[in-house]
Image (cartoon, rainbow, N blue to C red):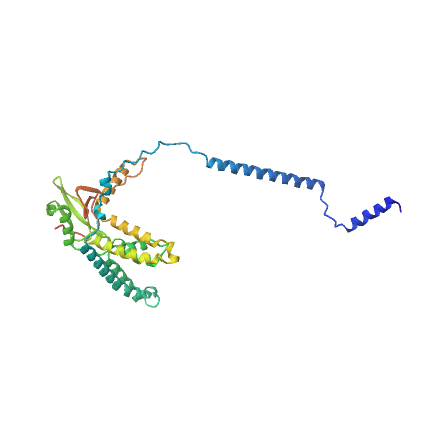
Length: 345
């Protein structure tokens, strides 16, 4: 064999052993190369746009408004070091009396709610014992009305959260929205004496029965003598001793939530912070002067509203008849509620 014939024989042997690859036409191969090149260009453009957007987002913003005014000067050292009246330590006798009152309040709440909690399965046996369910819910509503403003406010909050409680529970607790246990007419007159002095009876007349009663205050229909004429007013009066019971119940609630704060699975809910915020919200409602200021602000803001919007009217607090425990508001028309045909004393 010649050398060329031997080389051709070896090439044939290698070609027979080498695996055969699928045949790709030349035009298809060109299309693949073009698509790969186009994808690389698109990726490069997207990267450039992302970098440009990041640089634009973190650019230095120009000053669009004037710099804030300088802070007010610090008070003198004597004023800064003077103790606040509310932060002064209470005498030992008052502190002991407060602790005793909190202990008695805790014992009372334990005695009232323990039977209610132990018998709570009756509220979920409506198919077997429907009459017992009605009795249990009536007992629950009456107990909440007697325990004070904080428990009633918690029930009112629960009645407005169908996302957390069933519709049946929310419907049962809706009774406490505006139908709580009212206080007596004597307590209302005592609050008006403390707010406006004993001479209010010559210019103000109130109905014996309230229009509605909430967890903190109740509202009476009234008539006020102004410019020689009697006009309809709504008289709002705080319940007696409501602030004392809110502070006691708030302290007990913070104590219970402080214990729950130690549980690992409950700690992230921050029950201690929620209890403090809830108690502070109730304590801010004890001053009806804040409500009068808010009503005046609403009236001023909506008086300037334009654009063809329908008028919105808010009650107008009567000057000289705004105090911490009582408030008189001028209303448009007749104050609803109360017995029909009820006369003023």
